[in-house]
Amino acid sequence: MDKSKDEQSNPKPEASKVTKPTIDASSVKQNEEKIIDVVVKAVQEEEPIAMTESLIVPDQAKLEAQQAVKNTPINNLNTPDELYEFSKLLVAGKMCPFKDPSDAMIAIIAGKELGLSLAATLGGIYPIEGKPSLGVHVKKGILLQNNVLFKKVRDMEPYYEFVKIVDTKPSVVAHGYLNEQPKDTKKKQIDIRTEYLFTRHFVTVKGIVTNTAIGMFGLVDATSANLLAKNNWKNYFRDMLASRAFSRGANEIADDLLHGMYSYSELADLDTGITYYIDENGHEQIVT
Image (cartoon, rainbow, N blue to C red):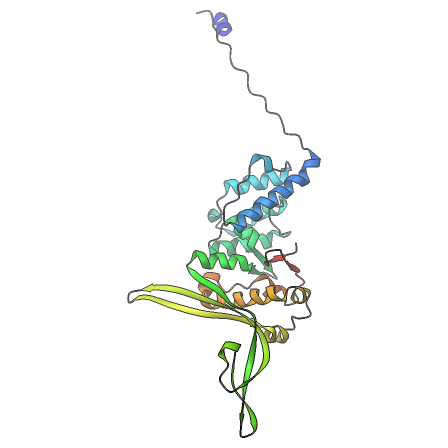
């Protein structure tokens, strides 16, 4: 067979040319904002991050970090060296709010213990002085996933002491809320409180066992802890009371699920130098 004729009739396909993408500097900031929106939505909806091609910021460090996230299941990171190298990629690619790979590593380890996705971990866990702290919204998600129910039953409700005149002398006979006032008593307000009621069911050989807990935090607690002078407590008192009340009750009824982790504000308010703010949904967010 004449090879020249065969090649002419069946020409070899040309090798595809690989062209490097060009970086449009003006679109980098816009794309970064899109990525943040995707991450925030994924964390709030407890869903994995879907990184589409249109959201990729063409920066080498970020491309490497995105590839690492895509190719590395978090449960496969078992050794300290693997975790640290992965954390370095996340920090270098600005795919997490941390500036120190050690903080990213602490968050990832805590997230694995809590059974969180990587998106929820990076968006909901923040190490403060080496201790992982949890956003209250993340605590709520963990409880709901494990069938722990909760309800805010009192919202900044006045709390009283009830006084009865006995032998012409006033005597405190009870404490409680207005609907709990005994007959023939006078009331004196001594606190403002927010309460959450928690319910958790356990299946045992004898049947279903139900545990309940009350998480409460009030003005007296905040005053005792010297919290009222802090900006968030002055400007968002209702939200802060709710956050502390929830965290108290959640840690009491589900300490095995939350591993005793405190909320952002519980650690940040210990004068650690960490700043947080209250977003439009009433959630605490760390300033990074």
